[in-house]
Every structure is written in C-alpha cells, then in structure tokens.
Length: 403
Image (cartoon, rainbow, N blue to C red; front, side, top):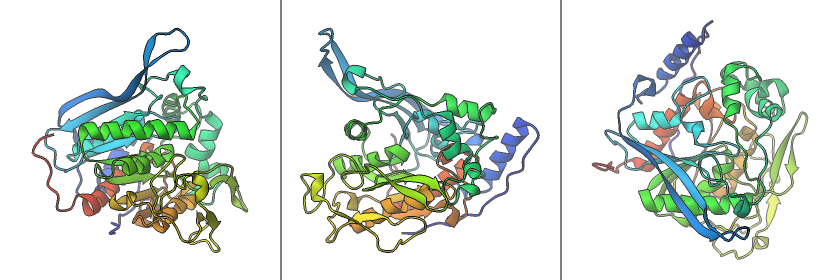
C-alpha cells in the first residue's frame, strides 16, 4: 500500500490568541496538499441527526416500558459530494462526538475537514454516552470521567512526565496543557462518565454500528482509542458495507500494556483482548467458538522498539471478514501508542489482514500525542488520512450523484 510523505511545518506563536489561531490555520493550510481548508468555509446542503438501534424493555423496577441500546448520530452532507463513501466517526473512552467537531482552541475539526473536501460525515455518540441516553438499569454501573492529572500525564503534558519513550517529542497540544489554561479547560469540560466494561461497550457498539450502516449504506469507519475495536467488529458484522477502516491509536491486543517510565517503559497489564483484537466474538478461520481456543506467544525478538508483542501461536487463525476491508492504523510519534500499537498491526498481519501502520513522525507529521484530533496540526493529519483513503479505498470508484 502506498504511504504518502508530508513535510513538517513551523508554527509561528503569537502573543494574542487570535493571531495564534490564524498562525495555526495558515501553517496547516500549507500542508493540506491540495485538500480544501475548512477555515475557508463549508458549503453544506443538509445537516441533522437521528438515532439508530435501540430496543424497548420493561423495567423490573416500575414495570413500565423504556428504551436502551440507541445511538445518537449527527450528520453533515456537503452541497457537492465528491467521494463515493461517507465517513463515520466514533470517539473513544470518556469522550463524545464533540472530539471531531472542533478543537479546544477553536479550530474546525476533522468532521469539518472531510465535509469541506466533499465527504458526507456521520458522527456518533457511543451508546450510553453523550446524547445517547445512559440507562443505568440496563447498562449497570459506570465510572467517572478520567481525572485531570492522568490526562496531563498521558495527553497534554506527556513531554514533562516522560512515562513513555517518545513522550518528550510532544509539541502539538494548544496552550500550556495545564488546569486553568483556557484550552485545557475547554478540553477537560468535554470529558464524560463512561462504562468501563469492554464486553458490554463492544457488544452494543457493534450492534449500533451495524444498524447505522444498514441505514446509510457503505461507509468508511474512523475510530479512536477505545473505539478502535469497534471498527474491526463492525467490519466483521458488515464486511460488505465497511469499505475502509481508519484506526487512530486503537485496537485490542491479547495482553495490555501500561506505561511505567524508564528504564523498562512498559509492563504487561492484566486482561487484554480475549478474542485477540477485541473482547467479544469475532470471526476466525478455522472457527473459534470459545476464546480459550486461541493461543498466544510473545515475539522472541521485537520487530519494533520498546515492546515485544503478543501474537497467536502457530498456525495462526485467520480473520476472513477483515481481509476484505482496507485498514489504516495511525499513531502519533509522541504517544505511548507509538510503542505499543504496532502490536495491533502485527496481529492483523499474522491473521491475514493487509494493513498499513503509520507512525506520523515517519511521514513528516511531528509532535502529536494521543488526542491528535484536538491538537494544533490536526488538519494536516486529516489530509494524510484523506490521501490514504483516496489511494487505497476510493480509486476508480465514482461518487454518487446525490446523497
């Protein structure tokens, strides 16, 4: 698969927020490589929202009927659709679809980039998150948002805490990254409670994602972090409707990894993905009826830096439904995933799934952490993804006359 190369760019800092935002926008515009800059405006023909999925149930508490399992989706359709498939965006843990609509420093988000460049875009709030109602009786207990200190250590100030090898390279978070900074406060205000049960979240996400594609037709699925497993599961359930998957810093591995700092950097975390890349059943060949039938071994020698991946024992079972779907896996060069996410790609490759794994630093996009869609050069990243989609998913396929 072709990987496009991009230049890094310098960001001119200003003493005022307004001039600073202008500098960010101008810097990114120079690196969009022919794609349109959403800062120049959007031409939207239709926008709105709907819910997919959902089942009525009778409460054991009061005997009345309610609904659970529904997923909120909002959409924007450009005046001229120039791409054959819409983009479906699904956020990660403790987040909502707002991740893709704007950045904390007021720049247009990935959704606006894709709309400006002729894609229909659908943005979901995961089941039980944001505007998708949380039904406590059905979903069980949920935890609080992720705390401030942990977000600074892992996302906004990782260059200071040095928990993982390339955290020091982080340069793209807007503002200081500290509590009390306008941009950090905007970001942290968006954090929400969420269900930490991986089996439950993946089960309902797969059902709701399939229902969404049944409604809108073939699409490209973009996931981030926790939702990385969702892209694989939705593609497994609807392989004829998922035309491409972009997994940003996500996807499961048989063993988890915890960043612990130098000199060992990472330790195995308990749990992991019981079905290899997910916590719920996914289609294997030969078939797997129980996750205990899967065996794992550790790489004798790491194929990349920092960690030795857990992979299947030989002979490796294949993932036949995912073989049909082009896969792009993206990580920021300054994130912990730059060390560990290669293991997701390694697992897919071993299971017969062609995929392109990209550390953005290797293609000239520097300084990004885990929440790259909120960082200063996020439009440059969107342009890279759009170029990959054109080369690997859309080539030779005409866009619909209307959508």
